[in-house]
Length: 230
Picture 1 (cartoon, rainbow, N blue to C red):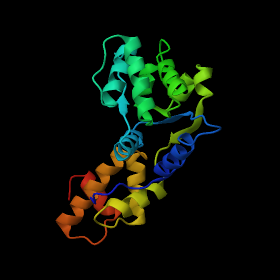
Picture 2: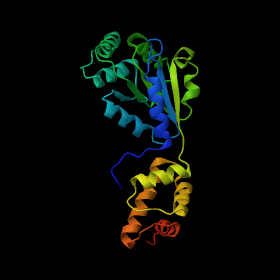
Picture 3: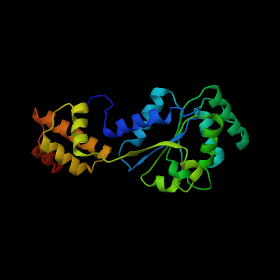
Picture 4: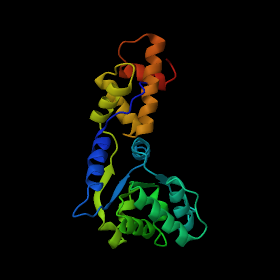
């Protein structure tokens, strides 16, 4: 496959949403939420965005506490973490005030307990720095319980499963071999619109094309791969 970052509808929605989230309104910068089903490219997109912009990217975990969350944030901001939670919070505030950067927190579902997400709201409030939360497809319902937090979202970006047009666009952008319209529909059905499953089928299409010197991969070739009869 070609080494390029493909542009999908999800990517376009994300980039448009980030422009809204990072733009001040009357001097204040809000927060953002990115959510959707697994396998739709949320993590890949937010990691790339953070890397391209040199933004701190933090992945929450199930065992994370307020202290460990703040410690990870401070580390990602480039400083050795202090020990106490209040010192860590002040460290994060000073670093973000000194060099404002959008803070991206993935797997935020793990933080929807004990008011841990309020720490992120406080960072946004004190530093006026954009904070983007990334979570699974029902995290919006969990976060709506925190009204003061929810009201801060400048934009809510939902990643959806790929439709057939997305699959066709992806194939054109990254596949080394053309795939017929029937083949695209087959991949859409078998991949369930998920990014990783779709990539598996693209790899199979390229493999069968190389082995059989095909100019175009059709549904019959993909069926042969599935049945082990390349």
